[in-house]
Length: 395
Image (tube, rainbow, N blue to C red; front, side, top):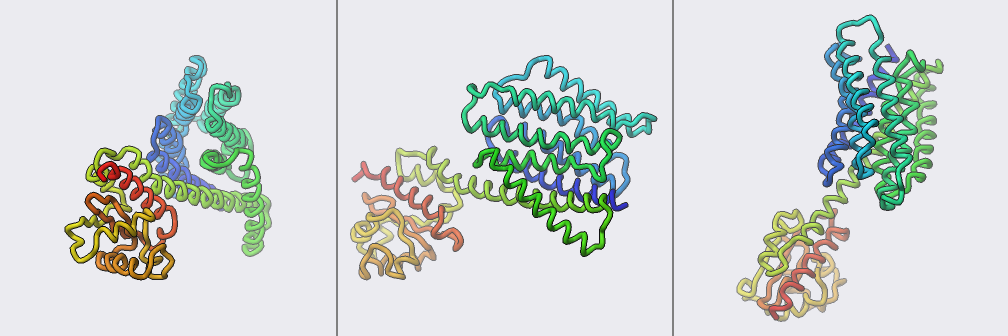
């Protein structure tokens, strides 16, 4: 019973991590996005189905799980082709597709209580297909790929090489083990892929070693508290703890990458915005969160102020902050700061900038408290700077 629950927990953690990565890949751009979604989506379905089968005993879940993993080699081959930007040899394609077909047959026949062990029938085709794909990646022509592409491929090779021995532990007739460790192998593949965006693959060795040390220490502490002494129980506990740590690390990285992509959304839109007129420029940026509620004031709406004097002050910098104006930290005298502060407080805004001088047009924006002083201010300042460049010929 302990073994089954530990396996279900391990599978559940893997399904969460792989599913999160598949969803993040779905939001990505480029030809690799659907391939990554297919591969890691299938793996997430496999682990979710297998874990739920342990808890519910529903045979249909096991069939779905085995069918998903049977298709995984084809999905992995598609990812490898996309990364290498070339087709795999025809013989390899036929072999992998044939292996997946054989595995599917075993997966569906296993639900009919055949006398042979369908799980072992799955082992050879899946493992041999992944070995062939690993060889394809490892023997690539590095000169045909960029440095960043070679880094991603190296990450895939490293993750797949580390995962293959762990995958074998799921097939207990081939490699007796207290728990199937393939979920950890799958999570490690995703972790090294995500990490390869900014780090060298060899740098992952240190992080994985640290995760192993932390998992070992935490497992020993929990084992002492729970009075677990059997080696098999200790191995299961350590596997679950390690999977939890890897998933936590993976989710943090995915969240950080997602935040970076959202921050880069405005900059990407700036490159495509209309540069022919200020109105067209602002219209193209109107849906950006930072600018969605921006108030634009023109000379006619500034009748109570000296518009030219405001413009002469604001032109010194692309972006002015209410907090800095109040604190006297802005490059403005008290008399220059007072009307800016009044305008900002009237509009409930936190930042102001000059959009154009002929006629005078001011932009007032509201930044969330956590975004102030960070990259959001840089993006906003860049927007005002570009707006001024567009209106400069009108002067």
